[in-house]
Length: 163
Image (cartoon, rainbow, N blue to C red; front, side):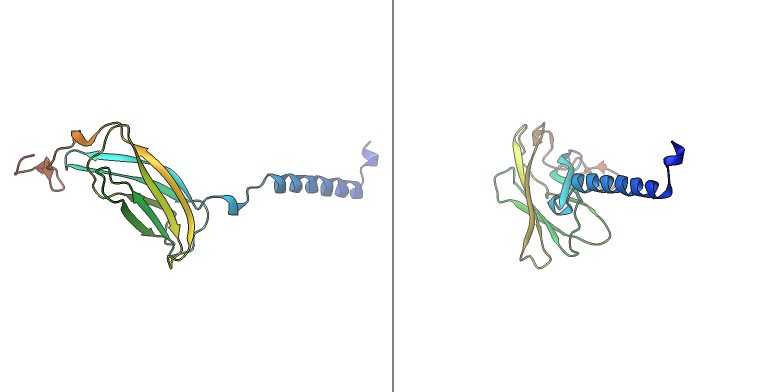
């Protein structure tokens, strides 16, 4: 059997095996153009009763290269019924993680979905590159948050005005 193994046969078998492996790899590859620009890693509501603050947001990672200067825009539904809170962040070269959150909000109800519309625009804001919608729910209402901060300053000193 070993006498039938020759260098030309080994080369032909190796080339055939390589061709089969390349074909399998080509057929199972993921086309980068079909991936979304951003992958949402997580998000939700943040209640800080000590400073009387409620906001919500999300963290995203760039899945497909974005041109430098592109804009990530998030429109957060206002729980109290006003217009959406629009937050924007420019894409830079130093990071591929972005965290966007609403300004402080009030009127949050438990188990109600609050919509966030995410858009990625080119740097001139002329072309929409990607859009996605999601919703966040809070398990509690903002009734647990006082009207005024309980503490002030970086050391959480008691608020002299009460709270």
